[in-house]
Image (cartoon, rainbow, N blue to C red; front, top):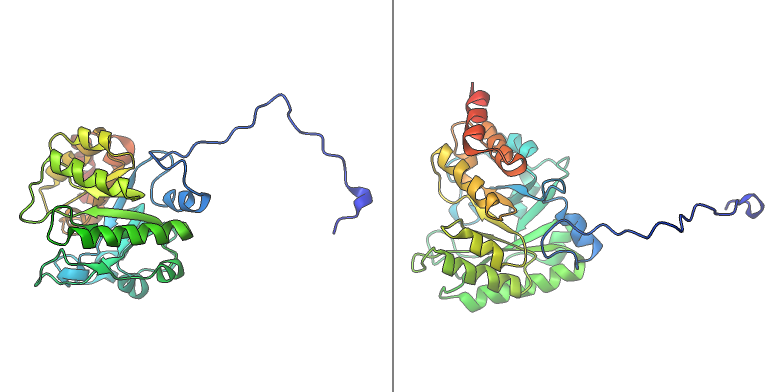
Length: 290
């Protein structure tokens, strides 16, 4: 201990300056505890307020789909460009270097494969496992309007309770089945239900009228990349989404199935974080390819 006789009286109280607490930068998250906000700051860039999530959890029901045959060769080189990774615990343990220090979003639901009805998922990970793996968030599929809607909502609320208990965010992923219409009315319904039930942030699809979706949802929304599109179309979708209120993108196939995945993810980053136009991002893509 310091010698009490040598302690100098405190003097720099700045009594003329009111105490200032910086509000958290993410929509609807200022009330959260310090730990969960710190984890969210490892998913979303505090400067832009947005994220480029690299999703490669597809193998949990599709197996080794194209572009994900070798995670160590195809995906690990891309992680340097991602703000956060969305993946399964098996791939995290076996293939991702522990030197990766940004946010980890763990796929927390699963069950049926592509050969079965996909909506009948269960929680596939414990909160202790998420803590052990230093997850920033847990992702759960929610099938609003699907046959197993109640089961998937129950999965969400259980994860929200566990995540709030230990300061880990919950990402609700709104799934769209063959029988469901993918339009703004449905997406507004699905995202709002997820937010009302406690999801920290929501992943959904970009649709016409998307600005009404983000306006009606009180928590951040990131858009799903969806199926593989031509590069310009994917960049245009990302641009339109963030300009209409999205807090980023969660892209998989439009990155790891691109002709040059490293160039594509950098072009997406240019749109998301720098507000580059689709043409500016496409020009960067062509330059990086060259």
